[in-house]
Amino acid sequence: MSLKGFFEGGVASIVAGCTTHPLDLIKVRMQLQETHTLRPAFAFHAPTPMPPPPPSGPISVGLRIVQSEGLAALFSGVSATVLRQTLYSTTRMGLYDVLKRHWTDPDRGTMPLTRKITAGLVAGGIGAAVGNPADVAMVRMQADGRLPPAERRNYNGVFDAIRRMSNQEGVGSLWRGSALTVNRAMIVTASQLASYDQFKESILGRGWMEDGLGTHVLASFAAGFVASIASNPIDVIKTRVMNMKAEAYNGALDCALKTVRAEGPLALYKGFIPTISRQGPFTVVLFVTLEQVRKLFKDF
Image (cartoon, rainbow, N blue to C red; front, side, top):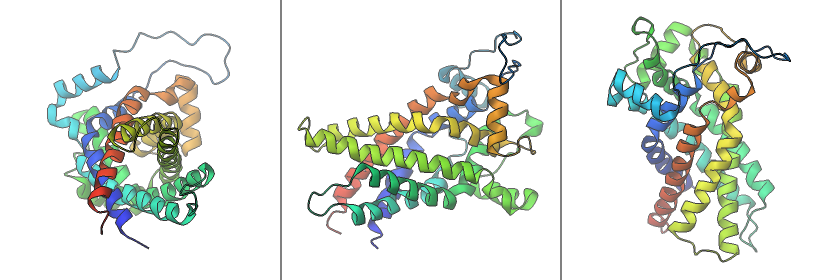
């Protein structure tokens, strides 16, 4: 098994993760916003009206973060992002590359969409299991600034977060929400990597563009849009489960039901604008960087 695919995917993922970290932080803050409108799950009457919440779009959330916590707060948890991409994305990108090599038709040089999706599901699930501790640390570090000063965890970097979680909450806390992380990663990887390959093949196959930067940007942005739509609901639940201080939810399903009951079905798409705003650029940077790294190391 060649390790080149793991290295190339890891480098591209770290570059993409650091570049889009502020957008990811804004997305997490928006997903953790909770409304207090009582909305019974199967009620046919209008919910009890409550005062309108303050503006909560990605720009206003970003401005409030900068005003209250400083510009550097936009990069809270970036050390966890680096570790997460090193563990999670290096694994998923490398495994997808390995499966792609094995499952590609040698005569046609292509792989059926069903196999691409299967490869993405397998690679994403394994990668997420490996990277979950860093994912939990990243969510907590990104969310810390929204808590009152007395309740903040104030982790001194990702390794301090992991150490303190292990000591204070048990080693099992490092895999809190792991089922959600694995499910999300399977969906993201399958939709992102498989759709990128599919869009790229379609563009080249129809002769619309040549294999260059334009093709890579177009295919990767389309892949990012697909991944955002597919993953946002489970991402909201994952973020809330990972960030809870006590057992506020009895698992993912309980969290989903309580969220929908209290805030309505559209709550599962909270943070969608920053999700697509982050996922689009992230996917573009990821695949453009990946293609360039591949060119650099094609002779190795």
